[in-house]
Amino acid sequence: MKKIFLNIALIGALAIGMQSCHTVSRVDTDSTMDISGKWNDADSRMTAETLTEQILGEIWLNQFKKKNQRKPVVIVGFVKNKSHEHIEAETFMKNIERSFIQSQKIRLVQGGDKREQIRGERADQQTNSSVSTMKKFGLEVGADFMVQGDITTIVDAYNRKKVVYYQVNLELTHLQTSEVVWIGEKKIKKYVKN
Amino acid sequence: MKTLINSIAIFIFLLGTNVMAQNPDQNPNYAESQAKYDEKKDELTKDHGETIQETYEAFDWTENKLKEKKARIQRRHEIRMIRNQRNRVCYSSNHHRGHYNNGYYNNGYNTNGYYSNGYNNNSCNNGYFGGNNYSNSGSNWGSTLLTTAVLGTTLYYLFK
Image (tube, rainbow over all chains, first blue to last red; front, top):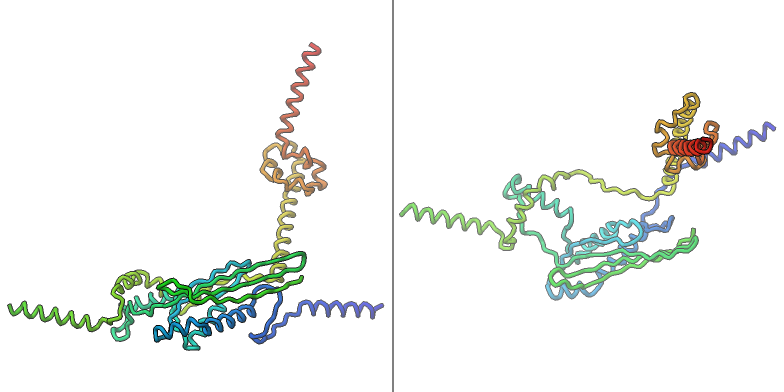
């Protein structure tokens, strides 16, 4: 009888110990781990890879270089999330921007809040920096193209099954002529069964 | 005359140096931008070297479950507290009749459905908080008085 009680207590203690077990392990950032079925880092990485390949490899770039004898200057506009999930576009947009600089095929200019801060610092330099180091207004590089994008989803669910379709579109528009010179897309489809 | 020539020479020199200093590619409207940013430069440079926290709450199944559990416990605790409070009032009211007519139970607690869901089926109530509960005691007393008055008048005229 005593032995049975002891065994039960031991099993109980083991169960409690296993329940409160909390482990953390490092995994490769390139590994694909789907847990909830929502948008995750793997989707972001795949989107970045596909869109980078498309934007750097398509005809608009060579046409621009041939016509203007220089590299195009690009500014990144907004990416509108029209999906049903919280998706941070910055993760894949930064990868694309990085590819512009690394490939040396496209020049990139800053936009948004960061540019505002830079201009603020430049204004500050007008009264605080030495003349030889002071940066002037009116000498920024004007962009030739703007990248804009949107993320859309279509969800089809029934009982415990769900199909989620993501589509990420990026567009490159010439700032002077408003001509769209390139449209890139990445499609992801997931089947989730609960 | 000599002074005038000197002034003109200085003016031309200054103009020349200014033109020399200006980059030919510089935007002719640069002063507008400069003036605009000069006004808000302090605001724009105040975050230098700082991390701007723009966090969002990611959905975590375990945390969400824990949060729901806490909310449930808190809700039960509040219900228990209100019930205890009511029981105390009920106890005291048994010793002081007429306590229920002082408007205490017409405070909205009894009209929101909260106390008509079985919570008040405790030993104290004994039906007081049922259909004809004390929350409506004002109108009940009124109707009883009216009925009594009508009955009394009828009986008076019958046996007059």
